[in-house]
Image (cartoon, rainbow, N blue to C red; front, side, top):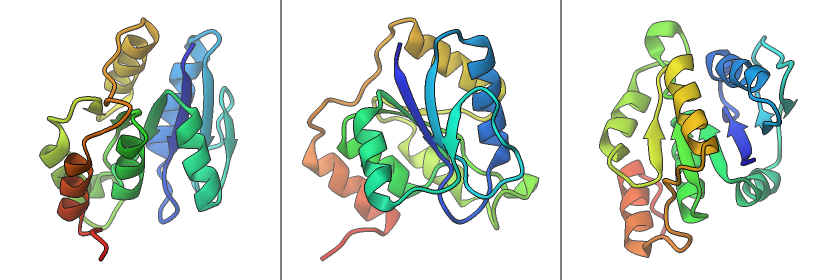
Length: 162
């Protein structure tokens, strides 16, 4: 069974993602899920979780997992890709009060073509992506991703450092 790490980041709650993941885990016997849930109101019943983790623990969790499930934050996406993980993202929607604008939709539309990167928008698409991963279908980024790919993503996100 794949180890799944989920993260909603530290800025805003994202109960829709955590509820969907918890619901999926409730019907997936033996699922191994750990989530950083942030300060949302929903508290999972079927997955292990914590409200916050340190940046080092965040990286350690991604390093240890097989699948990263996250909001469409560039820090999560870049770290997952750098560490060669399958990255499943659910963009926050301003229309649902999850963010100030729809920039996460723009982010995923630009990155959706990457191997090992999958965009989901609701419980059904998240469940299908996780069921596919658990059935043995592998859609992973190569363990040593192309440095040019990582640089391109960093440049796109505005996170390029000198």
